[in-house]
Length: 92
Image (cartoon, rainbow, N blue to C red; front, side, top):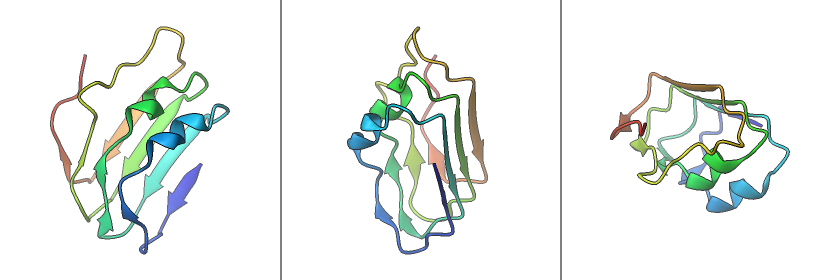
């Protein structure tokens, strides 16, 4: 799934993104000034997700959820955070 140049998006991503069980790649690129918040922890629990790519989001501050844990049964290989207003820490 790639959301690119959607300047009208607002608010955070919903927790229901965790229902997309067949999602392999997730990208947010060049999205609007009212789009941001904490990434949903359910995103990190998707078993087939290999890549999360968030780039050039110039709006609200984004953060990783404090309870973000990549489970042993997930396939996440890459977390790419480029040119963003990210705050907080990357959990171990």
